[in-house]
Image 1: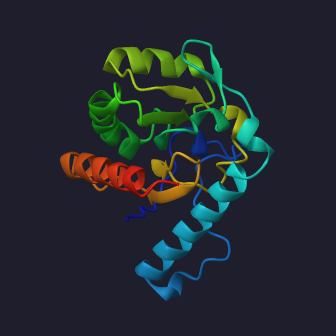
Image 2: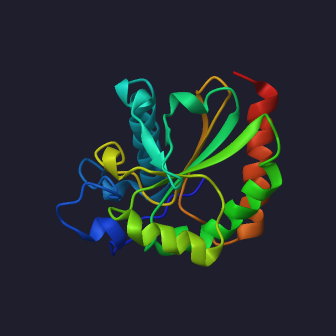
Image 3: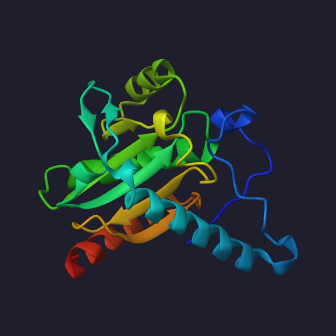
Length: 196
């Protein structure tokens, strides 16, 4: 797993009032080294997501690009890769074409799915971006749960088993899209095979 901590904020995080897409700086001892910092960030990420999925947030309706509502609870029953992104995030933009390829490979399967959470504040920016890039993967507009993703880096990915339990989490994009694609598909297959 990789964790990338960017010195500059972009996108929604650039707004000082926005709680979205910040790395936890408080309470992290920077003298402990990169490996320990990465582990601590991922531990905090996992705790944050786990709390959210076991709370009332699990049933909060989120709107997709067609105006339909879905909840995290509705994702149960399939191995699900969830990816968090926003339009002005450079690593997100680099990763999204491979997320589209993954979606294309598994979209007709009944046991796996890809769902993305977009945390841009303005949906009117997102829709043209999706159309321009011909992205067809499912998108849930998640700005309404901004406080939930407070402290989570983008892009972030986690894989849930059919029972809705997080089995894999990752943050950042390493730059090798084909490797990312192979690893994501293998992780989803492994989670599916091992079941809830």
